[in-house]
Image 1 (cartoon, helix red, strand yellow):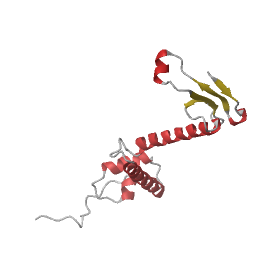
Image 2 (tube, one colour; image 1 turned 180 degrees about the horizontal axis):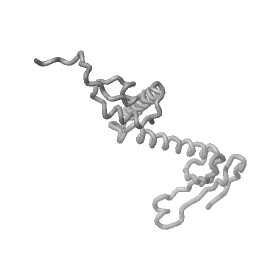
Image 3 (cartoon, rainbow, N blue to C red; image 1 turned 60 degrees about the horizontal axis):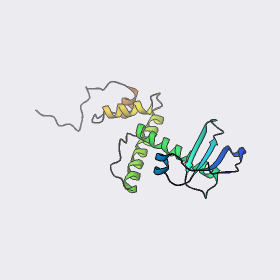
Image 4 (cartoon, rainbow, N blue to C red; image 1 turned 60 degrees about the vertical axis):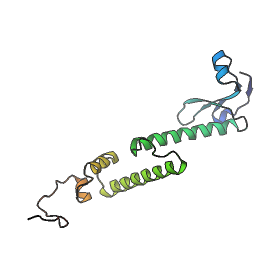
Length: 162
């Protein structure tokens, strides 16, 4: 540790220090001074330690940025788990944003469908049901309720071969 700065304990900050790595290997990999900020989240009681090279922003601002960054990480994890984006097709900003918007629109449609159907099925169950019946022509609410398909009704759009 090179120096310590005063912190506001009432804001959840524990320490604000300037550090430098001294080990032979680590000093070669990171030869610059870093700022070490320790923070305790008032909501969860968890203690976090952040390393940054930003010496201009306040310690509280840096802690808030990292806390928000974690929410962004959780958001992307949620997107990958729930919106079925395994990988991004493009890497440009526009390509990533387009895929996220499409996935979010799909999720909102599923959430609305769940709300409209007033069923106790999870969004994941509704998604699986739709995936399994993607090419079936059925009434959506009948499908969601789980009623068996009626085969005795002729499809008026189907051609009859004689």
